[in-house]
Length: 104
Image 1 (spheres, rainbow, N blue to C red):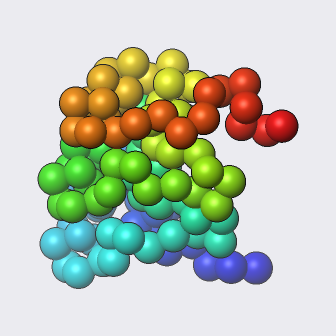
Image 2: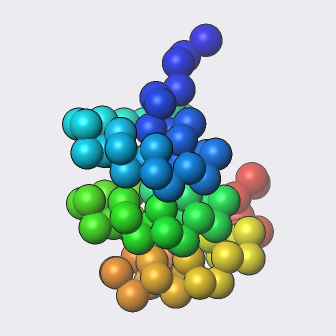
């Protein structure tokens, strides 16, 4: 079993203060899970707008793909997080796949 980096756990829990603390203390913002999931991907998927904005400002790539080719914008849209999707688009994010192609 592969360990999930603490930053990704904090993002998944929507704990903005812990995310900020970890990044300020040197957490690797480019850390990934076994399938290529990044902190930004999780924040977009869960609709954590404040964390998405913080991670983008910290330098995360808005178009980083998971191993299956899905991007943060794809999951924000798929999960109905329109404000997150709008922010990602404003910061240069592009769709890679349409929601109906995710699990073909």
